[in-house]
Length: 66
Image (cartoon, rainbow, N blue to C red; front, side):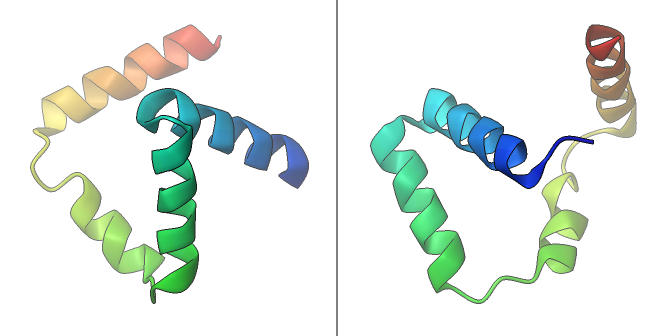
């Protein structure tokens, strides 16, 4: 497990790479400003992803991390 600082830095770097700096900052501002139910969000996040795709992607991530 990494420190909170490392996690925040890595998260912001990933957001910036994927969204661009302006949109990443906008995303963070939206998350802070609006009520957010993490549990509900997680339950809906992968609803449209077939299980075999999800499991395959998880395995690829695990293999890459090792």
